[in-house]
Length: 401
Image (tube, rainbow, N blue to C red):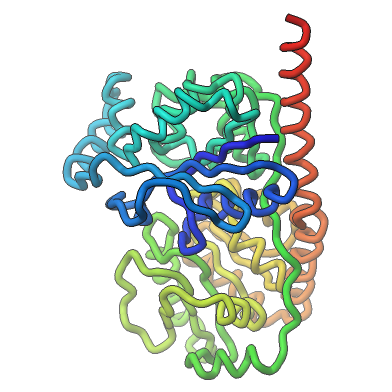
């Protein structure tokens, strides 16, 4: 099949979850299919400033075509428009203007779809909330496959999305909770569709070098790990508050909170909180191999890859139960404990600290869940089945004309 992947940013250095999902799927499918990624020249999702040159490059066997962003995001104007759209019954025109302002505004990408969209068997779109997907899906709706990566945030309630979500020819969802959420906004079941999750490679066996690397980085033996972008939107401000509340309640516990990911918010200085910023792959693996517990505080997720990565190493999790996706993942895996408040966070963490066998069992159950549901052969089989059926159905319809 000749497939186009449309995503707002693309590259090995992009930390976003939907972007990483797009790139991983492109790399996995490229040996069997002709993959072209259509994306912007930007690397930063806040400013959308052009960094890469427009034009064609290669990412291994994947063809990448980048399109220039017409103008960087006006942060003040965007904040004002967001307040207007989310705090009042804004008109459809103002809601559509929000998708333009949210960016990245890449008109040449839309022109490419107008001119060449029908040369692709299917066009896969990541993330409904950005300009390329919102305005690109209608152009090639008869061959569009939407991966919404939808979360229960303000944007999902915009009125214009009710119709938008009915346009694609098919859907790939990350979790059952995401599928239910998007279907509710479309006011009908959406199909054909598949819940695919994402692929996780088996964890590497830990050795003494991993522990040495942690010691060189100043990481103590007992730590709870947060993995990902350190951002208020990821619930990190509540995690910091909850962990300090835990330390107040259990002063004798020498546990440290380690934050591994680029910081988009201020992390207050504290002797038991370590913020590493962006970490290289070898340190990331070492952290996962030796973490006692993984904390996932996000209120908004379509799928937590960090949670799967922790389970891949047999690390149990404590997760924000106010996020239906996280609660669903933990329930299906039986791989951790949910919490709804600072008090419940402290209780869950204290339980895992004092019940070593139960902590180990929860981690192993999480690993078994990843083995069943999230290895690449399983994920790719789900993707291939839906895409193959869709192309076959379109060929049959074309042959009957």
